[in-house]
Image 1 (cartoon, rainbow, N blue to C red):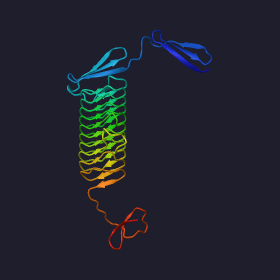
Image 2 (image 1 turned 90 degrees about the vertical axis):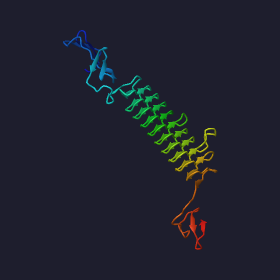
Image 3 (image 1 turned 60 degrees about the horizontal axis):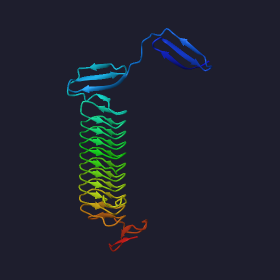
Image 4 (image 1 turned 135 degrees about the vertical axis):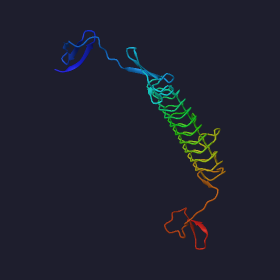
Length: 277
């Protein structure tokens, strides 16, 4: 015989069990009047330094002795489903299953989003992440801002990453800006490594423009309607796709024969002239 289920009446102290044959039997003698009570929520008053814990029976337990005005070391349940945040520093976890680990005046609106710290950071998209920094906004799903200040992933920039820097904007899916300042990518699968005021794609052109392109650094470089195009330098505007643009190109250790070189390779002949295999 095997017990398949059971119930307990806390008023009578009797446990009733069911067997695999359909029979039941009772076990009595347990203490009566007892029910499980567990923690359901908590709040912290940074002005008084008191932590209040709420139980399932409606009762509260208070813990005092914390430094008033602080409480930053306490993690509490947020107002939305499954949310967690560090209390005492005006953080708000509004998106379900979101987390704010630290910082101040940070807000998560997006479902399953995370802000690790920083100041005045905001997530609006699903599964977005902000590591820290100041006044960063992640607006689209699966996007990440590592840190920096005033960086933004816009509503078209799904899966994009801004590692840091200042005033950088990603508006193309799976785009990357590693750092720098005032860099903008509107194109998909595009990368700006750093620099100042570099741009890939144009907001008013089709979304295919600038796709798969990269700017390695420098300043005032632009790739607009071209695809799979690369810029290494400063103040360069690309004018064709599948090309690399530089201000000056210095080639060292140039081969002096064609032995072992594939088609398209550059070499220097016996007269010192550059040629292509």
